[in-house]
Image 1 (cartoon, rainbow, N blue to C red):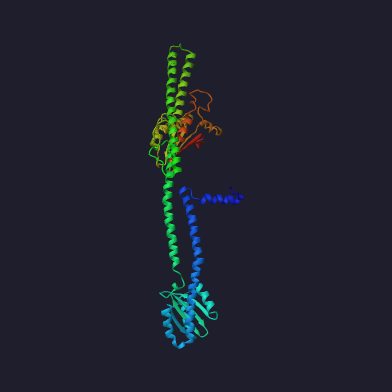
Image 2 (cartoon, helix red, strand yellow):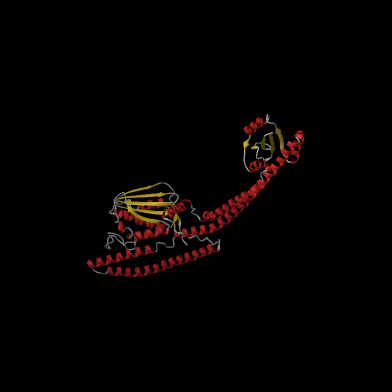
Length: 452
């Protein structure tokens, strides 16, 4: 069921999702656990405060007010026994009690208001209810008896000093600590459990990504939940089928190569016995073209091959390719940012792909610029030339097998149309991509990007 919101609301929700929603499975799952846990804790504490905490606080305040009322009433009836009443209050009710007449009370009130902090709460409500004709104030100070209650009546000022614990329940702190402790323990167990589950998914994703780059991780073993193990087993079977298909295709092409080269060799021998003339020249030209097409086709379909992935220094590879064209009349520029240039891949396949691209630049341009850049995420190779370039509407077509911008099959004006197809196949098999753009030199720019 999909709830449809207005466009503006939907855009806001989408922005919030992209901006604040965690990207990884681990943090998204932790969010599903953490938010309900916090909500439960908050609701429980609020319910405790509104219910048990409030009732207990009111009851304690009412009891304390009743004790003070009893002492005041006893003082008013027997004022000559003030000391005995003070001893009784301290012994039975745990508060210090003093009485000041109207001449003394102003100094006491001023001193209390300067040195202590005025507070309110359940006790204030209880005092106003019990002593409606008196002025009552509650101050918080320091020490063991940190709470002072002043009850100003027409006949004088009654002062009580007691501990604030008498009106606050200490069980709230134990309750909160217990809830926080159990929640933290539950959260820790959930984190440890989820890390194990997510790790198996992350390793499966990494193995799949490595396989796409041509790296066969044979040490990988399925583990985790049954769903993850089932997906991992399915991936392993799929990988075995792909490898078997590639192996069978390579073996078949090796046989095709042998079968086709044998008659071509026989045709070459027969042509040597032919009389010189235009027919012989055309015949030999056709044979050479067939051999070139056969070599290009075999290189294209066997691009994945069985070559093992190793660490390849792209800087040295590009320099070795460029050095092959040093004797040409074209001007060559090469630059690099001196960052990490080693990647894990199939060296010969990568060399074949870059050679095809760079040779095209030398074939059609007089000025060639090659640039190698790398960072923490990817490695980029940029090849620029000042040749005629490729029209924008043809840039996707040139990656098709046997497609040539130059319509003839003359090997002097171009290959058989497999150079860029092989390059794209190799780059894609390493998890990268190849892009054709306009060059600042006026010709074509080929941008090759490979993840590190």
